Length: 151
Image (tube, rainbow, N blue to C red):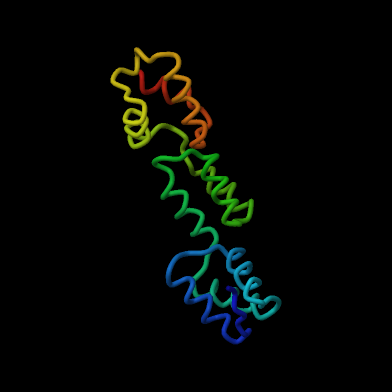
């Protein structure tokens, strides 16, 4: 059930949303449209929220990237930021800071998931499963990661 809110209550609605979690500007605009509010009132409130530091797409994108970096690759993070409707120029800026090298957390996760005891004696079938898994997690060079883990 959706309910409509008046344009005078949009600021309180946004502050209520932002008190629970961060949102991108585009997500807030989308939520306002779902409530039947659009136009200059929303733009004014968004400008006020940005001015007072309540919403900042760049900060939001960097926080998301930092949260996912230990276990996800740059392509996965890029997709997630696109889902959150972050502008492309900010996504590009953030993705340039993401290092696609293997972290200890992803190595441990792979070892547990695929029961890897010795990286140098991997069965070809298991190796392919690991490569596919790392690719699905957004890592651009999964084979290089496994080579690093072997050494």
